[in-house]
Amino acid sequence: MKNAEFKFMTPVNAPEKLLSLDMDSVVTGSGSCFAEDMLERLFSLGIKGLTNPCGTLYNAVSMYNHFERAAEKRLYSAADFFEYNGLWNGWEHHGSFSKASLEEAVELSNRKLVEFRTLLEKSSMCIVTPSSSVVYEHLPEKRIAANCHKLPGKEFSRRLLEYEENLNALKGIVEAIRRLNKDCSIVFTVSPVRHYPGELTLNTLSKSLLFAALKSCMEKFPDMVYFPSYEIVMDELRDYRFYNEDMLHPNELARKIIFARFTKTFFSSEAIEIMEKSEKALKFSNHIRMRQPFG
Image (cartoon, rainbow, N blue to C red):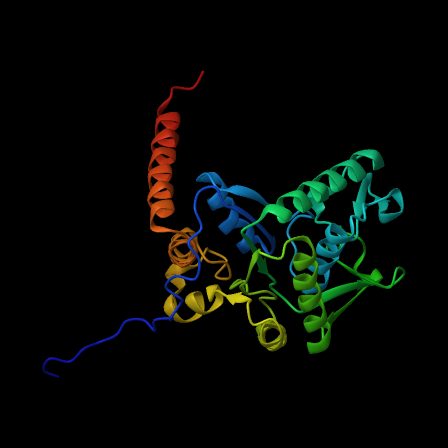
């Protein structure tokens, strides 16, 4: 066909510029491993902040728990931890917070919670990235577990958070942040990582419940901001060359593309220029270090 124009992707209309944060801005966040990756990139380039004070979290209820604790200044105690296989674990924490002694587990959890609260009070932006509506309830404790800590599967019941449960948790997160910092810009994004590879219909339903709740939450709080990480991966980068070998997680190239769109949306051109220079310097430093002879 003469003069035909062919499109090789479906562009997602991400907002061009919602904020103009500078290099002195403090950024906090909570959520999935995808959110952690985005924020760690910012921190490596000179932005101050903290993400995931309880470790990587996937469901909105577990995320709400630590925001509420931060807002209420409610520290963890020994009663919040249990011993299993020689480690002390917390139902609100990722396994990376498990320690050989109870004192260590409590100290680390409270130190990160206090640090998170302190930085959240100063934050220009807080990024909230839930990933799934699927939760595991610990039957003896009758509570949602942020992590199962390798306990026997028979002790848990897997279920989906209903729309209302997701909505109440998301609203609770916003209200907790607002109690600590009225001026903080709250950015929602949904992790593009697919969960439950053997049950992708469950993944679809899980994300759908989350999106429906998120839409209602943003209608209640119209000053909230949504960044389309999920849509960029699913629609713009609709090709397995943008995935890791597991075909579920966005690869380094995909994450770089999203990060570039993210910074363009939320940071000033001056800050982006500084971050680009920092990234080049970091790459050069890593390259030199890799060339050093082994001792």
